[in-house]
Image (cartoon, rainbow, N blue to C red; front, side, top):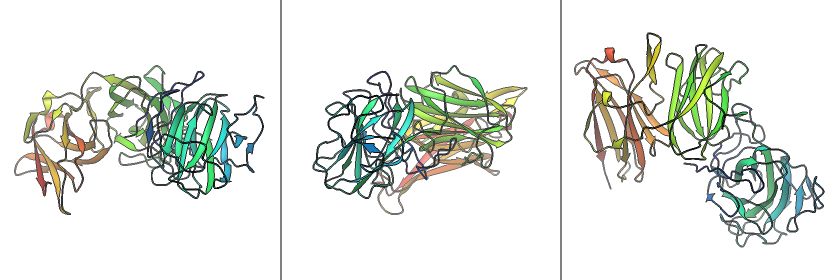
Length: 462
């Protein structure tokens, strides 16, 4: 999972260097869908003197700076003398193709925490033009690059990235403050050189930030885009996207209520649209809800999509007191769903039901389970729930904080009068998962009662 941390601006703002994102074309980011470029996670520094690195990155924009296109050797827009260690000042400060320059003639002047020793590098001064989230990336370079930021020639490293997911380009995403002066270094991996391309673009999706805002709040999707969709619906219907940063560690509920349309909520990692999807939940009587454990400072992007219609909706985010997962899965598990609270959601079941004008949340039994590790092409584990009620069985990576990897709705066995559903893992190393059991129907429809059993069958275990 991408580690996202709140960064302290060395003057007065914060810088973020480890945020997830995924785009098909980093030069063309849709304001509500964020479609562009490759995806991944960056380093997330917490301020001067602190550095965190990862080997994947998040992409937002596309900018290139070069000695002949968009860089200057003298000064900046404030009239201050430039940094003494640079190859140029990025001017203009944002855009695509700001830099396109060979690194072979350059010296080996810098090294980042994610690499760069023994490789030639180029360095540029970036004067941030306005407050906001920006993406810095090296997409378009013809060699394996590293990208890192410093607050001065000899100052603290603020972020370092090697390899945006699915490529050898590098990417850093974060919030920057107007007039902040940064040193941007494009380096080579393990001695590689080539034509360095640097791109810097503002993040356009999501266009709204809920961080620090009083919630619940009412919005409208009438003017939203209609390019987002997924397993929980929304294709061809208007949606809105929001950024939010967790203030505290814990289990968070993201809820949307509306009487104007049937909503579907999607939750993605990172502060930009297109990051790895954590969860989605479809509509249930005008409500949709996604729950996830987040760390303080972690950013997520929330899509409020519609499966039919448009209009006003209320969005709320709540830090819950409950713990998720609730217990370890030591099979066989025999339980009663009435003994559990509402702590999780899934993509194949509703979050609750409505009766007499009141919405009631379904309970969720959550269990931590680690796959034992498999050998052989036909190895794996099957996790099966048998229940007296209509059931959804979800398998999520991590401890209620990772992406949903499988969700199956139960099938009714008339002869046994019970429902059953199975999720599976195959030939993988030991991996931590959360197993979630949730009802999909009101209690009066539970033909076999509120009890359930979970069994795990593994074969070819290492």
